[in-house]
Image (cartoon, rainbow, N blue to C red; front, side):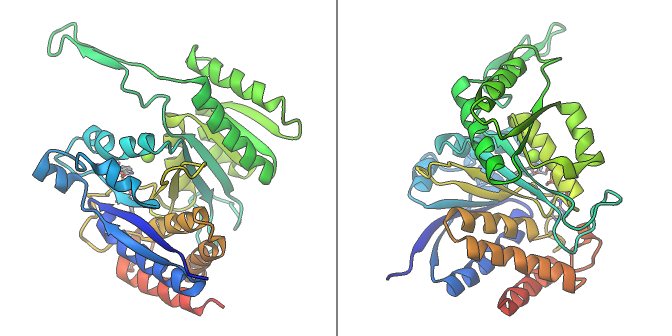
Length: 357
Ligand code: NAI
Ligand code: MG
């Protein structure tokens, strides 16, 4: 049997994206050696520096180039001088939409060896998944600006919720919950947002009728955010719109110890197109170039990519290596209270990976 080789588009991007990418690639290589597959890396220097040279975040045929790849592995984009809506709408959002990556899956799990900033959370006390709708919702191009610079200046931003788009995200979340504890929490705000959010709730109630064993709870987003802090153990799978999911998962990252750890998978569940794996964090210009970036979020994203490729055993090994470093050493970056550099954590991860039996 020939061993598979995966063509992976690698977009380190900007800032710390370029620092956390090499350690994750190194561990992926080691995982491939152990489990009998390999990677054909397509390194792409797209992002804000590319934008400052060319006026585009990626080349005109960027999507076509990516379509030739099996998966996309991204660091982070964004840098002072380039407006954030340019970096987001010039790269990430077109990729998510062109490749129907309509699920953004974000685990919120407290790893062994990490203390949550919340008091009284035992090891394993936070373990849930956020399913964020990733293609529509509040992140829409519909709307406009009028009377710029005049006293009557105004802006309108419209949300787009389609039955098709909401149903497919919810069906994905329902299916996940059924494979776990059978509990689905939905983020709504149907008291204040009176068109899209009641529609969101109705669709969920309709779908839930066919899943009598599933426990479905609806929470207003503000109360839900408070419960992430007060009682995170109650959650199993949380389904949320694009904006709500985005905000909730930065909070999720905070309660599991650091935004530097949390991973994110932009999934095309049908596997008709490449999916994209990235850490939740951004390019962190405040610490870029200082060797302080935590590589764990990028490595966890690598583990999710392995899962999606069908190498769950290899994906588990990457998590095991992270937990081994966190439980058996005090090698960690400053965001986790340590003094280690990105390279020192990376070396420790390699040693831990190699010691796994
Ligand atoms: P950020 O996630 O880059 O940083 C927030 C805070 O967390 C900073 O204090 C940073 O130092 C710290 N941090 C983030 N990742 C870390 C890591 N791996 N290790 C240690 N500390 C870490 O978010 P911010 O500051 O809002 O955005 C900075 C830039 O990144 C902006 O241009 C923004 O648009 C972009 N961004 C890009 C994203 C992406 O590419 N998917 C996601 C979020 C932001
Ligand atoms: Mg975010």
